[in-house]
Length: 159
Image (cartoon, rainbow, N blue to C red):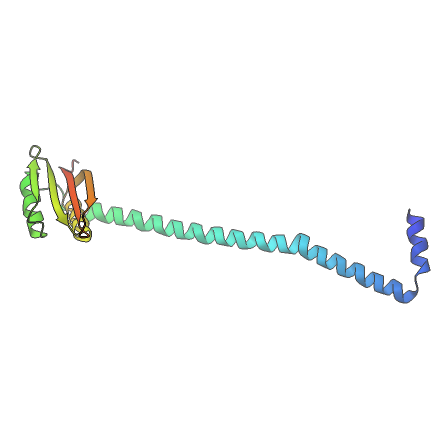
């Protein structure tokens, strides 16, 4: 087989031989680009993208951890007892005048509100958590007028 290729090569003129060598060099360059450089470049791009995603996820996790630590650090300790009187006072201050509150002993209460703006309600819940209450259960349904009908059970934080 090699003899056949050498014989074929010798039948070419020197100009054809040079053109064939240039063609083979270009084929090697293109094959090297497609088979080596391009996959390595794509792999590097994917690795950089994954690294960026991991850095973002780490930053989010650290921010959540700091917010959690701040919530526990800024908390005012145990909620004033009885919880139902405390919820009644703070709900009225927050503008939930139609709130129905049922005490479940001195350290727990259930509150029901027929119409509350979602932003105002969840800001009030966060304030209650800072003041030492824990939401044990929460049920919310949307009303026709962009408000929520909510029922939540709060308990005093222990420990």
